[in-house]
Image (cartoon, rainbow, N blue to C red):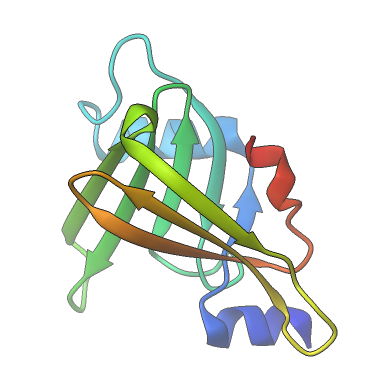
Length: 124
């Protein structure tokens, strides 16, 4: 039931960072800087979606694929130095997702939703 709710709600599941980095390098080789590596990666809809976001050693990157084929992709780059503040809401009994809201200069507020089993505090 939790996976179904995560899929329907768009909650992100953590995926293997090394496998994800290989996929990113294949799909968009110029996306990461030479000294940049993916530390944590998440895929929306409980790990079954086509949108994702990932934390590197330098920034937060968000990918939003749109259109029928998903070939149109919007990238958002949020350098850690641009983050002014953040808030965390952990999952509860009836609220099955954990939320992270980031307020960043130049982009504004970004809300990321994670599956209940994701330990949000590993993002520190």
